[in-house]
Length: 498
Image (cartoon, rainbow, N blue to C red; front, side, top):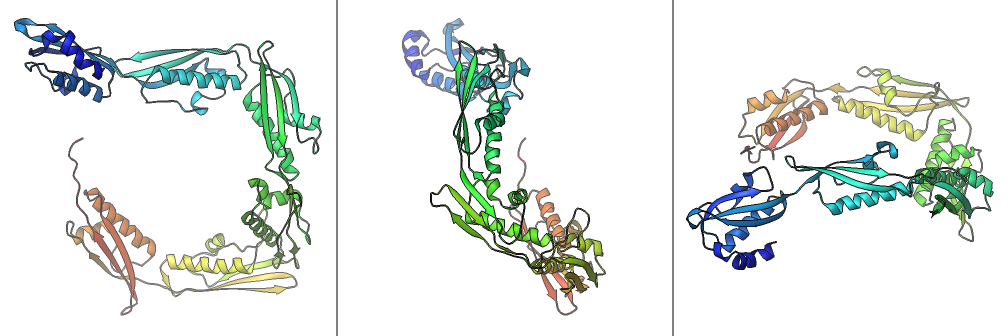
């Protein structure tokens, strides 16, 4: 339009060139507001430059897909300019009729251009994707008529895809290729769960493919590929299906030295879930088996690992040799010396435990050491200094007594609070905001809350770049804690206009 504009005005509308504008009108839209954006005004002399700039200004609003200018003579040799526009519209709703044709709304199957500029080409693309989807669900004879309502006031487009679905296709023949050395054709067809005369749908076919993969996976075949090739016969409205199976790598997992059921091994060794074999997954399986044995009472168990690939590279064996040792029970897990935390609170954080209904025993020296560190952290976070936690265990007739001994330290007060770097907000204001004062018991949590409160106080006053850092030191003079907040205020922001 812009390319044709200048010759149009220089030639066809030569008589208006150099005249003054009498009036401006925007035609094709109810609102005249966008006229205020034009560089040309009543009384201005008409030039190619101000006409071109005015058209560009209307395009720049994003409201219009097409702009042209008409000129008509006015009184006293002036000219009336009419800017004729076609509005842009934006996708609002996209509905399928009948609505119950698919199990889910269209947006669950593919992306819809909600909020984007409405074009007929975008509608055509939606129609084509919907047709492909309907064919995949068995409606091979479907036809779609798009209808849309364009609402001028809101510039929204409401699209309805009216579907004539036709009859849903039936399944013709079903053939299986591959995998027949492992399962019979009947077993594979039963797993695929399609027979001649059934209504066809791609979602049901995907479930059948998943069933076949699961059968191979249960036998130890990883990465089995199952694909479905369909051939539509329009003369009979039927679909012939070829199921192509490529069995994956056969993987055998054994645990010499200790019997673990195949079902349990599938839960413990992640190669089955991941569908592949690598060193990390094999090691993760070893760790899971060791943990399982410890839960079963074999606290001294040792588990190795060994990968044995087959010569033809189509199978692999993973051995986890196990030395279970003697099975132990846990007589008791005793906790002594705790005053601040209840025994139940401490037990809830521990990994080592005595077995209960639906919650088996668990013990290993490593887990006990980890529990000791966990309890120390509990006391440290509660503001205790100098707490000592010891974990010990003793074996009596293949049973284990576990003892946690706690020597609680002391909770220390906050001896002093120092605020540095504040200039815009006074220290009394900040102290009131942080709700922390000298003499309060120290914990890392209350100091972190005070730092967050000061930061939020600055944010609320327009200091969006404010940073507050905190540091804590022991005050050796009176065995308290010295807390410092270092503030970088930054520049304040003000709201100009909304």
